[in-house]
Picture 1: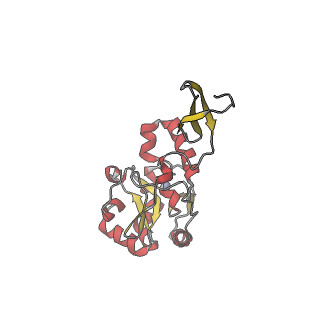
Picture 2: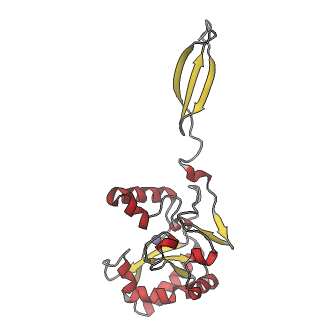
Picture 3: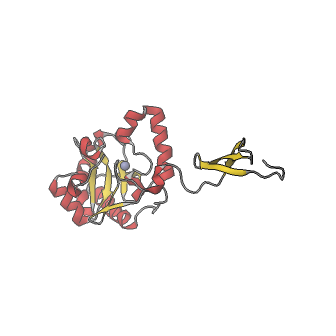
Length: 226
Ligand SMILES: [Zn+2]
């Protein structure tokens, strides 16, 4: 600081999203002050803010490798919702009453959910069934978790695939534009354990193609899942 109460800022670097480290040096070259100044946070936190949505052949791909930015917040896709309503109505006619357990989830909600799972199950386990914020297909507005209405015993469990409702969905979902996104025995490819309750909307043509191919979405599009 000089006689006029001024100092020359020599080093100013952002140490985190909200802090700026300022080191002031006086005329004589003595470091006279080092302080932390709060500055406005420019963007969301973490690396997610730089991510762009990935489309392969017009299909939005979200998995452990390809993520979405926090700002990607479309809500539930209305075309997917209409298709889901048709599927649920037809399932009911066939004797299977279903509930929508989960549909669109925002980035921040996924963040909360993931942290809760890590606290309960530990990070290793949580990563097998829960997506990191920005990496949940639910953020696309095109994914739905379904379960039987009679009992919640099979909700979000591999055993749902063995119930009559789970079997009906696995055999018929593609006719409405949905696929079982995380099939049995494909964890090494999709990055997720078998999730017979998680359905992803792709439209009837693509979903039928994927269903007939017997491939995961990653294999079908030729992309990596992890
Ligand atoms: Zn899901």
